[in-house]
Image 1: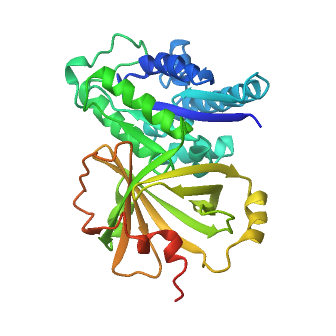
Image 2: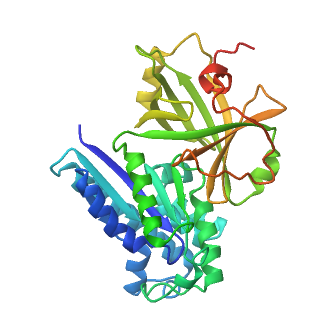
Image 3: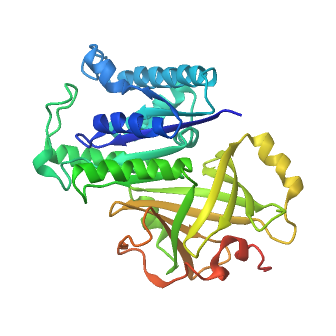
Length: 364
């Protein structure tokens, strides 16, 4: 069966997207991928004379942008399905949810209604999102407006846009932020490494650290613009080997997407993880293979983007005094800092008692 993945390359102004596209084509082609690129829709429209200024209102421009973006993605997917080769990567130069950063909440709700979509399905329609931090944050001397006629932001405005874009995508199950902690070449190498890791080249390793934390102020989390609340229900399935197999319902406000995940542990921090999207019908049918020795896990996850890290804070209904915070990393030795609102009790990365599979065995 043809394996088609659709990813988003996003980021603040002058983050390196243009160079990234060239690098992705070069490196992923070597790994046997057919790589297709969907050009940035906003720049196409603005350079063609369609902009928030020329349209009757910003919301009218955004409706045009969303319609064109979604149409392009459907066309590229259809084309990919008919192409030769088993592996295909569709790379979106910005995705539909990027435009949320340029709208009010009321405008965004109106656009979603216009295109008949909800935010969860729109966001999780992409398999992974990679955000390149603007040069205006950490590499100010390299910030320029010269390479994009549609760009007009000052460095301060670029930093604000960068933060709004990260906030717009926060909540996606695979969001990675590529900062300016190295030189530009190092930044591109880290991006390619993250994409290759996501695609499972040579195998999809998940490097994760887990911490037991004090029960967080959930009202404060929900008030943050860079935090999204996600409702998760996961059910463990029977497995013929030592793999951990589960199905998961993930979403908010009655809008959900579904996944089948298989995990095999290599070390305390490294696991091989294989995941694929399911239809609702496929998800429900797999309940026939449920592991009846484990209860269903329900939890509220708060996805927080801060310090160029992506924190996943899991609050369980059976705990009133503690919660779990997880951080996925590309390097086992990466330095971790915590925002003030996360109070760490202890690290539990190597403690099997705090794995979801173990919590599912606890009978209350």
